[in-house]
Image (cartoon, rainbow, N blue to C red):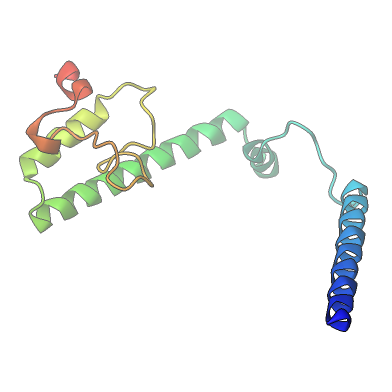
Length: 144
């Protein structure tokens, strides 16, 4: 019985020692600052600023182009999603048109995570669509 306890104590002490050495080594490794000489870091430079610099174009033009492409892709995805819902018979074409009109007339500070199913990631969502339970959302009725 004593021999079993002795091995358990030895195993626990060994685990503590290994864990302590690992933590100290990790802290020491994290505090070393070794950045390669070939990749200078410029604080405050965004990804788009670097891309604009590489391409030799104005950063504002690049940001505008990215924003336009993002909006076009979002509009295309919305159209495809609404069309799929219409084809499945979940909504009518009139409801799809209403939703698209509501979506395009929403305030500019409207949260981007809201969509046909509400907040992404929530099961059930917040249902911010004009035809949920047959009653339009407050923002949809305010804009019409």
